[in-house]
Image 1 (cartoon, helix red, strand yellow):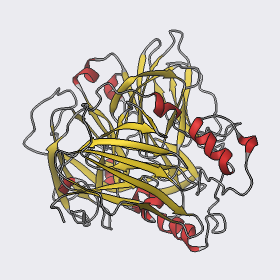
Image 2 (spheres, rainbow, N blue to C red):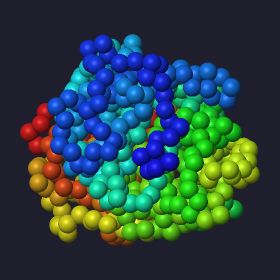
Image 3 (cartoon, helix red, strand yellow):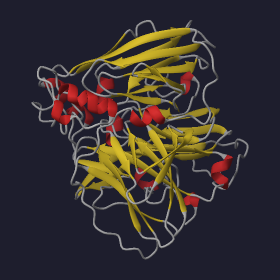
Image 4 (cartoon, helix red, strand yellow):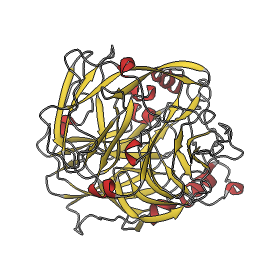
Length: 495
């Protein structure tokens, strides 16, 4: 196995996905081509149906694949994103290129400004790929819940030259109920718990929970009466998947004794945060959201919805089998894959662990330092936003967002305070931002596109207004976004 086999195990049948009759399969971008010029024909990407098995039951889900069945896309930095997206499903849809910075018309949010892609329609997208990184693509609709997502990997010249095996892991939460049913139950009966959608699994009480989230410490014995409960998970799913598989039937990736592996972890879950546990392998976090950070050593790394992690691992010369686990926040469920050298015994893994997954906070965020920080510059404009929520009515919002109007070439700062009792991974489209403040303390933090804001915490983001449009700023918890936690950064002059 070489590093170009990093999607091992994610293969889906081209026949199951299908392609539009208006598009013929082509080989427009060779895997071995390094920084080749744009081809005369686009890459083909088809939205289709496929079947997977989840805990002994067959499930019909969506897929995003190339004509040969490979899910998602792998491109080279500095080239053109030239893709013909065709739909072979029987309902309208649209795909967002999460992590890329396309022109506004190609962003993939329905009617902002592009219309939904109709059944059997093909639409061509052409824009610069930009810098390398671990990205992904997904529906910006409730269809995301039904696995309408796939990796979007952009490799740099350095990536191609490294003696590393790449392993992509796409995480998801799965329900046999539709997203519409889940949302209706969350909203219809006052709370997820009374609606039959288990809620508060692993929740911590009041101020103790808030302190735990912000500091990473264990203060569970210090709950204060009269304070509203913090909730970690408002849906308990039927399964948690890594590359479409549960942990009791995981993908086993063959690796070399003494080799080096670059994990590209994508949290594509709609409502579940995880902590990546590399077990006996000590890792180095080298990138977040596709952007390089100064290496952070460890074996435990948090990843909220929409976020990505690049973790470098060195395998022992004696080989073996090495589970890479994703621990559900505040709960015992887990998923993951197994890295195994030839001949290694792979033991059976349970989908539930003996302990609950850690509560995500900002401890790691405070330690991250970017390889390429934003240029030092005073802010031209600053906004103050407050994230709000009503769990009883299941409504969410962003106060202060009505006036998010910017001018091209301005340096923008956005201060976000979470006044609700759930964490919110906030994603800005069309830009990358640098985290410059956490809980009132200035930091020279990571460059990202999605940042977690825990309850009662605050972060400050800075970005340059260099991509005109009307860009969503929203929580990447699908049901929070669908219930109101979405705003727009609008360039002056754009209606």
